Image (cartoon, rainbow, N blue to C red):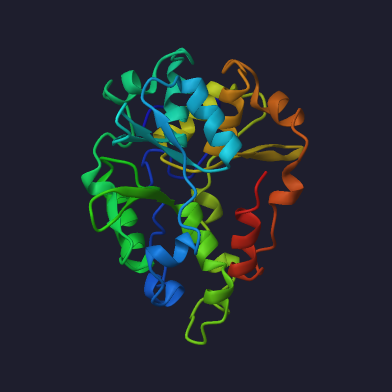
Length: 288
């Protein structure tokens, strides 16, 4: 990994890490029981956004912000799904300084999209969430395509939605899972699943947004803690970067200045290490 110019820190900054939990003893089967993709969708089906390929990157980012989702489908004139646009696409485009007016279609065919092919990202409604979790981990370790999202396909071949890791956490926190007597995660605490402190990347508030984007991309992480000797300023996530991009914030702005302008501080993103994993998951899925 290239040297982090903004003095961002991690004990092992030379080795990019996926979001797959290394050495975690939590079994996906134990966590989700026999729940399927269809169970995660709920009775009303999947709520997802399908944008036309001619939509701009700015419009796509705005759609992600307004929907609260982390990905949207991209369709052609006939309504056929041609690609998947994720929040990590926004992160890369934001870092590269790509014009917000660029079309999503041009971006997807430009060689930098995170989900250029659909085959590895497709699951069936009958697949269990445990199987989906294994697919996501496999994609993460392979590093060749997006690993936080999969497309859900109907038996007739039509796509009916997108399932994200955020949806997986919501399913984990659902009443159905909470009521499963065999759910081995019931007594697990946040510390049982969290990244060790030494594996957490940090940046001082004087770093620019572009420098934080660089860390998110190169370290393949979903968060960067913004901290200095005076304390924690906040956590920068891909979702935050989508919001900044949609709002037209220049990537040369100091991340600390941007965080100070937000209505919520780091307090509502903090849970004790001994919090129940289910409660930590509920806090993580709250819309901000």
